[in-house]
Structures are given as C-alpha cells and as structure tokens.
Image 1 (tube, rainbow, N blue to C red):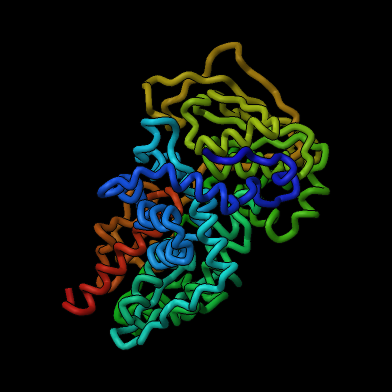
Image 2: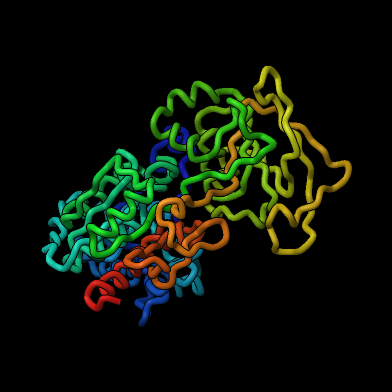
Length: 442
C-alpha cells in the first residue's frame, strides 16, 4: 500500500512521499505472487517489466532490479514518480484479489534509489556503426526512441529547442510530484549511451526540416503538443496565463510566482492533469482560494485519482459541470469571471459543443489570476509539410511510421496527449520501425 502524502512536503515542493526503506521494500515485494506471464508487466506501455524487478527485489537482487528498470525504460527514474500505476500495472496486479495491489511505484523508486546510491556501472555506449538518426525533441518519446536506437548501435543526435532536456516532465510537472534529480539521473543514462543532445536547436522551418531529412538516414519526431488552446472569453489580459507558461514560470522562478499569488484568488479552467498541477501548485505557493472550473463532473475528470486527491488535500474548490461565460475587467485586468452550470446533451461526450447552460445557475468568482488548461495542439505541420495529420493536427502514424518518407513519430504528437510511459513506449516502437527501415530500405 502506498504511503500517505505529506502536505508539508507539497508546500515545500519536496517529494510528497518518503521513499521505502529496506524493511518496507522487503515486506512489500514479498506480497508478490510471482505470477507466470506477470500481468503487471503486460500492463506497462513502456515495457519496464515490473514483474521482473519486483521478483529481483523479493530475492534481494537490488542492483539487478535497478538494472532491469534502467535497461527497459530510459526514464525509469521519472516514471517511478509520475506513472499512473493505478490505471496500468497496479490495475493488473493479481495481489489486489487478496487485499490491495502491490505498491509498484514505491518499489520502483526504492530500486532506483538503491542503484543511485551504489553507483551502477554506466550503460554501454553505442558503437554508432548502424546509421545516423535525428531525433527532434528530448521529451519522453524522443528519449525512448533515442535510447532504443543507441542500444542497436545507431549514431543518434537529439535536437532540443530548450536549454535542457526532459520535455513535459521537466517543465510541467511540479517538483513535489517529480523531483528534478530523477530527470537528471535519467539524462545521465541517456548520455552514457553515447547519445548527443544539441540544445537550443529549434527545428522550426521547412528548410531546417528538409536538411535533417537529407543529412540523416531517418528522423524521429517527438515534439509533443506545444501550442496551448486559449479561450476568447479570457484571453489577452495580463493576469490570464496558459498552463504551459505558468508551470514553467514556477520551475524557473518559484519565489516570484509565490509572491504574486500569496493570498490571491486563482481560477484554473480545466479538469486534466495539468489543470490540477496548476491548481495544487498555486495552493502550495500560498494562494488564498483556488478554484478549478471543469465541464466534467468530479467523477468524469480526466485527471488521475492521485492528482484529484492532492486537490482535496490542499483544499481546492472544485466547480464541476460548469463553464466560463465571460470576465469582468478593471483597467484591462480580469477582476472576476462569470460562468454557468451545464448539463450534457449526450452522455460520455465531454466536448464543449455537447454542453448546454442550465438556467438560473449563473455565478461570479473573484479572480486575481486566471490559468487556462484546456488543451494543446502540435505545430509540426508547419515544418514537415508532407505529414498526414488528423483531429487537432496530430500526426497520423502506424507503429511509428508516418506518411512522409524517412520520417517517424510518436508520443503526444501522435496520441494527442497521454502519459509519459505511453510516449516512451511509442518512441521505442518507432525505433524498431526505424531499424527495419534503415536495414531494409522500406
């Protein structure tokens, strides 16, 4: 069973749970039923193989457990903290039939910590003799693809538009959920594989894209969703931010944000993971009141259960089944937002067009800061113009293969926004497709 969340740690932006000690890890791993064809391993999109590393912990092969995680999942340290295990490996755990699922994330954190403490040998560097591959984006899918290719002895270069790697986990996930040291540990393993990361390299023109296609044997796109949707009702005011800029500002200058929100009324629009991260972070930084406005009912929120639990722990004020209808301004700044309760015309259709206002349910909320967390879209079509896209501009891909010659893709850019562990899995899958393509020319 998972340890309780420490509220003070959240307020200090430190890991919200204490790691397992030896005794706790032994007790928890001994609950493992040693299933044949372990269902927990089948439930991991990145192929981390929890069935194997839990078995290794059970039989006191702690270094072996750390190696298993590291070899199978290049972002295993990060995923140990942010993976929604209750939806994946723990959901498939056979032990839950007896009492409750094994705390797989806790055991993964324990094994990673043991490996760090006992200085595992560096990962084997790529021989770089199989071909040259460019990876655009150093987020989960890009790193997953690059690591798998390096193990296959490809010469891999990652082009990253920011000054540091990690993607969404690096910039969007608060430190109390994902300590920055875990990302740095994962990146060390990436570099040990011989992968080169070129920072501040934004492939933002067709000319740059075409040059990569000409210079490399294959190109992988792991750029994710990089343009936030914004609501016309609240957009364009100095105290209205989208979640990307807000969470990044917390990462780069938390004290400045804390001084700004202290005692203030913060309104977050959205019900997904990033909306909850914005809201919980605001409360942890000392905001007076934090509202979460969502079209969905509480039971329908796309955020994970643990993220909603964090919201209740820091006393967020949820306004479910509601939407923003307008703002009240003073000197160009938002002073309040107005909204309505809504009902759905069709069940299980959570698009704004399916919502209808309920009469006589209008409300007004004081708002010193409004954060929009209503989704994002990709912009890759502007540079890789031959790509087939669908929906909000996501790349159409089958097992990593796109419609443009020599170009492969995975992660949020393809799936529209999912988990880091799924993005890693899709990056690994695309690496195998790239390997087949370079070897066979198809």
